[in-house]
Image (cartoon, rainbow, N blue to C red; front, side, top):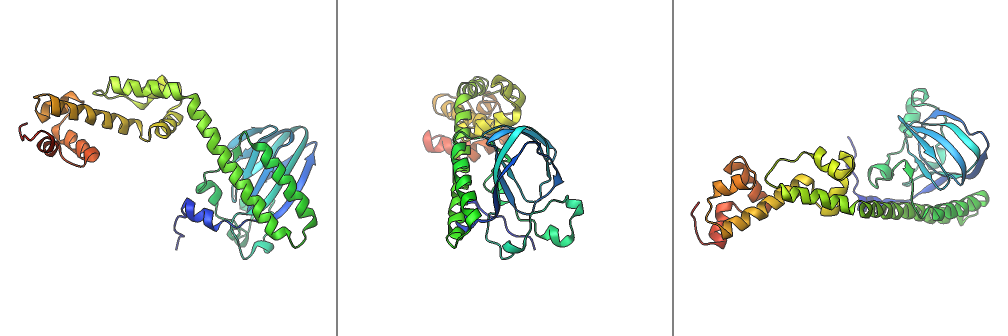
Length: 301
């Protein structure tokens, strides 16, 4: 039986990280063959340059970049530039009873036994918190500081370490999540005018069919990024934004013009009264005729 999807709030309440290993790795020629890991690995590049592959994507990593290698996701270190300083940790995000039994893996998935494949943790940080593989945030210095504290404590591992390491990893995750939110807000501000231009185009041609490709071109963004940023800014997809604007125009015509419902439907861009009525009820919660009865006191149309 498959586990039910975990919500963000539920995950945040259940997070109980345990650090498997923490160390300050320094290497002049960094190479590592393709492998999967069972847990998470968080790496901060303090100095040097790395070329890594995660699944089918090759990334160029520079100082200040953070990489979160995720459970079961194949990765390899293809090459490096200069001496690389890489403080990093292996950890479980949730408390696992077999935590101390699980080793750090250096094999491909195809090389792992059935038992080893069962050790792969669920990727809750990627799937639920939406933390990407490569993290670029302005507050990355806080990541380095926390990793250094954690590595220092790990090397000593007194009785206080087990509580301390949980608090530091939770802080790391908090800093990453808040840093990603700030970066997203900055990107949104950077595209504010271009998104407004796209919204203006929708309003000017509200009665026309406008393709996403045309809108994204107006905003000088890819279709994917345009759709995502538009919804973040307006709380609606471009289609929903146009539909809402059409309905607002239709309401004005119902109140201030003698046009019939069928004429209004055509005027705001709908090919049939049925399609218009369906959209109107979806937005307003009542049919066009009910709206007219309520606000105008007439059943004409």
